[in-house]
Length: 120
Image (cartoon, rainbow, N blue to C red; front, top):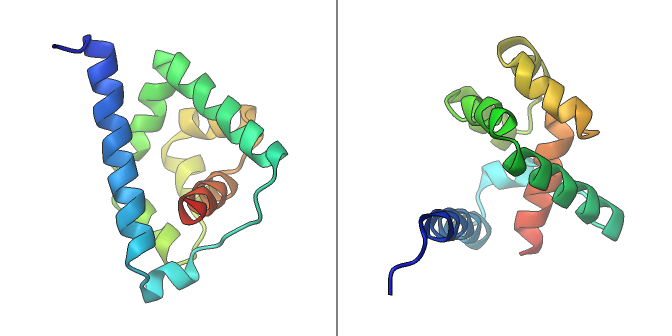
């Protein structure tokens, strides 16, 4: 049985993210010790869910956020506990605006995202 394109794309994306998160959580490293982790409550989870749904539902927002994936300095900076606010605000103003509308700074977003990954 062939899945509809939308479902197969979403499934593949979910599997890729899940595998990456499991690999990150399963192999603690010195870099992980530097990543900021916060306590998660229902308000934080609701805010993250709403933000992700908004980005996924808007092709222009998704494209702007996808542009940040091309910057190889962001993961290194995040993993070393550094700030990516200036990088996002300077190089990716559209993504910075999306974070702002969602009530996040880029650093806050990544902190919650990593906290979710570690909780998983």
